[in-house]
Amino acid sequence: MSSNRGVVYMGPGKVEVQKIDYPKMVDPSGRSIGHGVILKVVSTNICGSDQHMVRGRTTAPIGLVLGHEITGEVLEVGGDVETLKVGDIVSVPFNVNGGKGKDRV
Image (cartoon, rainbow, N blue to C red):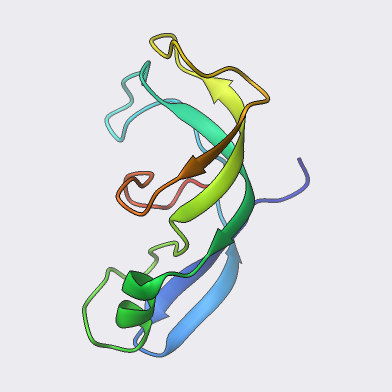
């Protein structure tokens, strides 16, 4: 893959498209994640909760990658995943996100 980019929150009224790291199947402490998948984003949007942060109505940490409602292609599957396989196309609802949102493909 050539690059990985995301829309990054920089403060009220400020966002930037930035290059971000590729995700890994490990949690922040370095432990393997067997119950997750890595997706290549096919389509996403900036939803209402993201707009509240950008408009300054709520707070968010600087550096948060926006756009958590996605459709994606499964690139990697954890060892505990039973119902998905590489190549599947999936939809991720608003109430599920990738932790801190910094590792998106």
